[in-house]
Amino acid sequence: MIDVRATDGLHWRAMTSSDLAAVDAIAARVHPDYPEDTSVFAERLRLHSEGCRILAAAAVVGYVISHPWHLGPPPALNVLIGSIPEAASTYYIHDLALLPEARGSGAAVGIVTMLVAHARKLGLPSVSLVAVNGSAPFWAKQGFAVVGEPADHKLMSYGADARLMRRHLA
Ligand SMILES: CC(C)(COP(=O)(O)OP(=O)(O)OC[C@H]1O[C@@H](n2cnc3c(N)ncnc32)[C@H](O)[C@@H]1OP(=O)(O)O)[C@@H](O)C(=O)NCCC(=O)NCCS
Image (tube, rainbow, N blue to C red; front, side, top):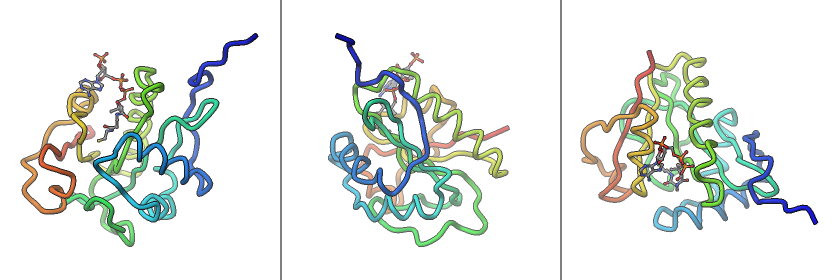
């Protein structure tokens, strides 16, 4: 009998609207303290599909949602953004979430490298995100540094330990 592990054939691919149920299920497992409606994921996919990808093997085991944004406050948790700013000034990683079985595989570092290349292609000078779940050390290893303190209400919607982080692109 062939032993097929859940992560055999792990690869990133484009997200489609038929993946949204799987994205919801992973978000509920990985981010129980940061609930977001499917409409939020669906809107980001509609506005910037190039920044929305699925980590798949035998099943969907992760996702990333990202889009151009501005250097002002990040989007609040669970809020529709309406449109991508015309004068975008940073590339924003809204969420990167892997199920535990896909972690430590190199897939997270791989997608960050891809997103940085995408941001450069768009001519954006930095990549920004709100680090939650104690993930700041992961982002620091990818070249991100904390920017200020979580003073504004939009960042506070992510909780007191949330940190706005940014990586400047040379
Ligand atoms: C954060 C996440 C995407 C990182 O993916 P991962 O597969 O666990 O990361 P990797 O194992 O490739 O880690 C790369 C490096 O970062 C380190 N690292 C990863 N997560 C870390 C953490 N929470 N704290 C400290 N270091 C961490 C690893 O030890 C590794 O270090 P090394 O290069 O010295 O070996 C993943 O853990 C995850 O989905 N977590 C839950 C959701 C989440 O918090 N997402 C971030 C939202 S902002």
